[in-house]
Length: 171
Image 1 (cartoon, rainbow, N blue to C red):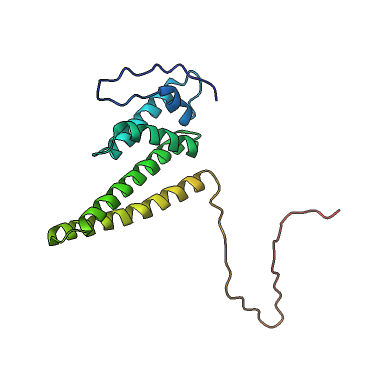
Image 2: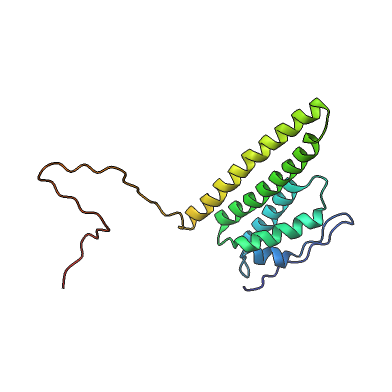
């Protein structure tokens, strides 16, 4: 991967340290592509903001960069999907953590809130799966499959089962 000329961010004392070269590499930013470099920084900021609550910001930044790098987005659409996937995973885990804490309570209101957090986590896991499927379809890996369960052949009719290729010339 070519190195881009992204400058290192000078953080405030409580800001996480962000190596923007790693961000550029994770989002497949090429040399001189300032627009995509800005998009990658914006998407990372959005992922971190979506994932921050009581957790260590530095950890969220580092984990987001590693995960997005593993997804290897090739363009802006894939970068946005990768960011959504990471944010959805973080939100799922936060809700499961919240649900576990609240569901172990003996207070009805906390149990009710825990149940709601678990339901949100359940919806987020489905969203995560749909996002992964969308990424695969976008990349061309979501192959269509047709299943034929019933075939009726009338008297005098013929049927062919198998792969049929049209316009093939015989030699």
